[in-house]
Amino acid sequence: MPVTSTDNPHSLLYGLANGSVKALEHDEAIAANKTLALQLQSRLQDFWLLNSPDGLWGPKSARALNAYKHFQNLSEPGINPHIAASLLNTKPTDLIPGFQLNGDWPSRTVMWITLHNQHISTNGNDGEINVVYFRGLDRKGEWNGNAPFVWNDRRCVLVIKNQVPSFAGNWLGTCDPGEYYWENPMNQEGCADIKAWQYQAWSVGHHHGSTGDQLALVQTGDITVLRGRLELG
Image (cartoon, rainbow, N blue to C red; front, side, top):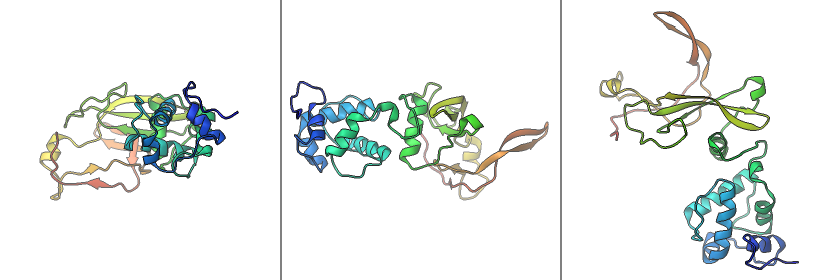
């Protein structure tokens, strides 16, 4: 029996899924139906893609729906029976095939990397890891203001074991050069700052110091840097 009653918190989504509610192909059409927009936002919140549903469908809501489609390999525009059925039938833990997510910081890291079509090493049981740096976050993953020339970033080791992401390590670190070399660059074009993206440019090796060799990650591939006297603050 077609579901069109607004008594159900996802009633219009059910209606879309069973064909009793007309498909909406554009964000403008979704925005014009505030009840449906609110139900869509509520369901997207279940997948940790939105906060605080309000029925106002705008760019953030549209990006959240597009992210869901990306994760589920859906390409149709707007919202139709196929997409509505997927939203209703997919468990949040199964948002991204091949992973079991729960909305925590490691899970959201997997979501970001996947959304940007980057590689994730998933054989954590065989020792594969992913090293991820976060600018301006504290140990709990909360924003700390990201003041310049302060060690206020995090270096985390993301591991996927049995499809579940977790951090095997979470340390204080920095993604940026120090103040001395920022003010006194070794290159006339300015101090080098690694451009934020994904690189497969480091391998396990040794650093050679005054106290002898030390096991470390050493650069073995190309990276992209930004140079110039940028204003920090």
